Amino acid sequence: MTAGSEVDAGRALAWLRELAELTSDEGGAQRIAWTQTWARGRAWLRSRLAEIPGVSVHVDAAGNLWATLPGESSRSIVLGGHTDSVPDGGWLDGALGTLAALECLRAHAGESRRPLTLRLVDWADEEGARFGRSLLGSSACSGRLDPDEVAKLVDQDGVPLADALAVHDVAIPRMLEAHRELRDVAAYLELHIEQGPVLERLGLPLGVVLGTFGVERHRVTVLGSHAHAGATPMDSRRDALVAAARCAVAFREDAAGGEDVRATVGEFSVSPGIATAFNGRCEFSIDQRALDRDVLAGLVRGARTESERIAAEEGCSVSWEEIQRIDPIPFDPKLIELAGRVVAEVAGASRSLPSGPLHDAAEMATQVPTVMLFVRSIGGVSHTKEEDSSLDDLALSVRALHQLSRQVVAEKATPGPLTT
Ligand SMILES: [Zn+2]
Image 1 (cartoon, rainbow, N blue to C red):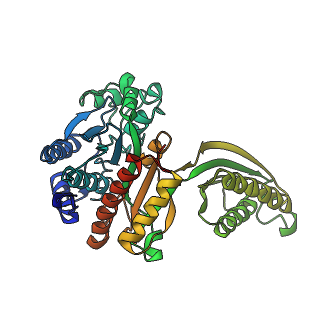
Image 2 (cartoon, helix red, strand yellow):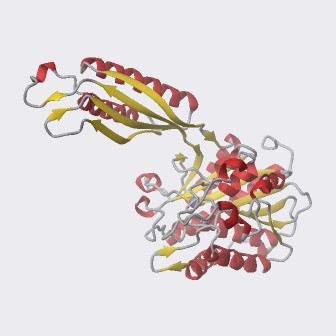
Image 3 (cartoon, helix red, strand yellow):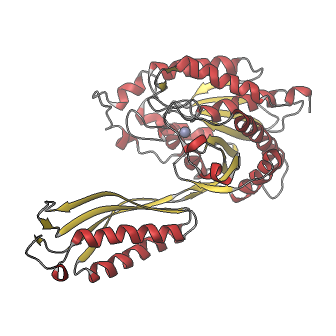
């Protein structure tokens, strides 16, 4: 190990400020994918990468930017992030992962020996802020994107996605060619802000992400019979709203009893919905999430049974219709374990937690061994300019990513239990 191999967290933080200054206004970060401001951020990233000796840069068929620091083997460890932001976004979402990866690459470039190749990827359009399709670049790379489906997308001004991409030399029918980037990838690592309150509540700066939640979303219809608010005695009502409201409370209690599960009644509508009658019909959405497929299935089953019981007690009937299903995506167990050890070493303690939001890492986890690190978010706030983490936590997170990348290189370079 040469002296040049140490990571300089302060440099990564200075870069974060530089990028924010270049691409933000008084509302916050404005690096919406496929815009001039985003491209300006990318050009800046290229010039920082050009300062690292031995690094070559190219953009793949889906618009993802790859930087490669060759090692003795072409087998690579990929460190990822995204420089695109939502409108009026924060300075850390996506940018932290990318610029921490940049600093790690710089540190690895100073190593006297590099058994594996190190790569940085800046995913294109993680946020989906303009066209409503998130994880665009990473899902093209994983091969899970349907080009015909996204070809129909237009932004609020009626600009087709194809036209916006063409400005940046990306053609939708060719996007899946980005998959070839994964040819020789041994592991994918991503550092991201938590964007939620869990680490703050635990009093921990860093955490290891277990994977991303699976989602089951249903529309539930409760049918009773509406009648006059004055004429109908209380004991002879079939009030669909009361049944539905009791369901919402029951679902919340069910989920509160489980670890790392969620249940949310979001949409809610009643009919006839007038002040002088109780309601004969109520429709609502129920969104349930869990990291484990069986736990999620059990949560849905439990809620259905509960809703049938409550509906019967209220003299109503209930029916469920599936709206959307997303499979849980667990990260690599061995990398989770290794990351836990690294985080405990760097930050004193480690805790693992699921990710509520989706991330590019979820796309990668379907293809290559993947793990993510979270850093504590102040107040759990994100996607606004108030998004922040303490400088101490950020510095720890950069050191943890570097340490993790070194250990993964060591593990993957020598045949052993981690080699896949
Ligand atoms: Zn992000």
